[in-house]
Image (tube, rainbow, N blue to C red; front, side, top):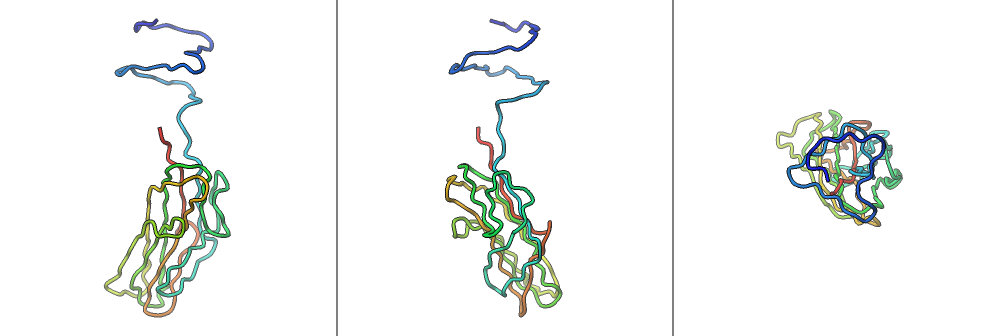
Length: 187
């Protein structure tokens, strides 16, 4: 038993044995100046996707957003054909959606909406109303939410809604509009 004295140990040291618990009392400090392995956690699975091209939306209609290009996908859990994230690991996930709505200077922009949809139902929504009815404006909708997934069938999708006086608006592509999520480490 070490009562606070400094001891230099050379080589590997094993504390405890399989099935045993090592308790660090309150007030004690653990200092790590080396490499840690075997504890902590990883924020996996995770993904981020964007659009390879702009997407035109029908006026004042909720539309699934076509995030068809993976930036990264640690567990192949994002479907680029159905634009859907279905993690096969249960837990809480930090989910985010950024949508750039662009009226293309063609018409009067009234309002935009963005939503993260879980299992076919609206989960979180962002609302932007442009009461001044400006021409040619673009706006960015951003949503973040912590969502609990069952690890087998729960999924999320991104939807948008853009209301113009007439004509159509679009969703900008590339790194302007992104959709992603990562698992939160739970202790």
